[in-house]
Length: 284
Length: 280
Image 1 (tube, rainbow over the protein chains, first blue to last red):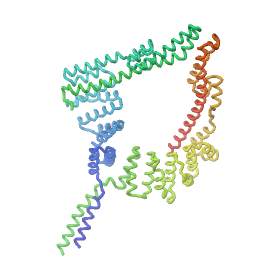
Image 2: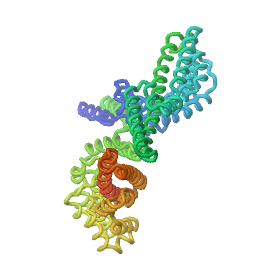
Image 3: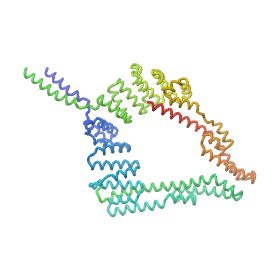
Image 4: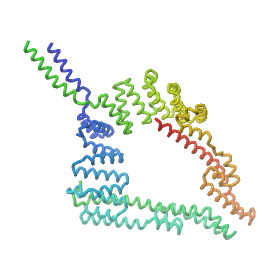
């Protein structure tokens, strides 16, 4: 009889726990999924935890959810959750890092001005690591906004003299490059001599195509003007010349713009290579 | 005996000490909590997650009418049109046995979202009251682009639709009385005055460019032939250019009229779908 009672009572102990998942277990499960890279599943379970977290014991999950969105390239939602995490965070250093992460999201969305605004609101931090990280991000903002003087200033703060010299050279070379392929200048070249601007930017085929096409039309118009009248020559020219002429110098301008953008991307990665090599302050 | 009673008492006390704390831990995956969370996911438009949650609930509590209805609703919001047929299986009992109008309307809304024409659409819509039935039936003709049926239905049920769905009625009426552009007329106009067929289809920029291009080349050709007769090379060159652009312009004018008509139809279709889908 006692044996039967023991069995019944022991079973009663198990029933409430069988299949139940409380908030702590779910958190462990979600953490495990996050570590394994199952971000979708981790995201759903973190949201479940926050939904039922009436005691606000799991506020740190806002930043975890933001990281997941960032890793899944959903930068708008990442920003939303970083904002929530920042609002409830009391620790200044963690808050600082969260704001820097927000800036990173804004970089991905090419919102450099918004990122700059937020970085300016950050106070100076006693930690060298965070201070340097802020300077790097400020440098990136200015670079993204094409303000190369300010960008150079912030990058140089992180480097020793050799590194500063390298960065200065990079910026100087980029400035020369930008002047050499200034879009207005290239456009004018093609206006004066069709095809010249395209050839100057390295688009040889497009340049020669433009040159021969417009030359051909012009020569034929001239022959017509000689054999008939000037008015006839102008009529021949009118319908063809403007279309190919304006198309030519517009193309030349677009080639110049693209060339500068490509060079900008290349300079950007070279700057980071220099920073990694020559930094005189610890950046992890 | 006393010892036995003591043993039993101790055992019961020990068991209670274990049971009550264990049962007081909230199970976040039970019915109520899972449903609450599923509704939260749906309200925040995370439809994929909501679907997973509802499907889990449906698996654990099959036949639950609330879960079935909300699961089908999530399929609809997530545009899971491959689940239309299984959704009928989920809602069949709700609709025909429990006479749930909510379930009937949800299935109809799902069919309209998927632009599907299931045979049972009219069977289910007939269960609704006349004002609602007329809306769903007219919407059915719109989403399946059966415009003649839509016009006829609208005329036959004018009072009902005008009273209950004035926007959809007005749209259907306007579309029925909309004037189409005639491709044949556009070609004739461009044959007479190059570019005018495109202007008829409201392509003003194209019309002007066609007119100037054909005009200048034709005039150049005319002047050349005028001066040197049929031996003029310029005359033949620019005459050929003018003729080929003139022919292309005729074809372009017909195409412009057809494009105008299809864009106009698309505008009405988009407006109708906006009205229909915003009502769900």
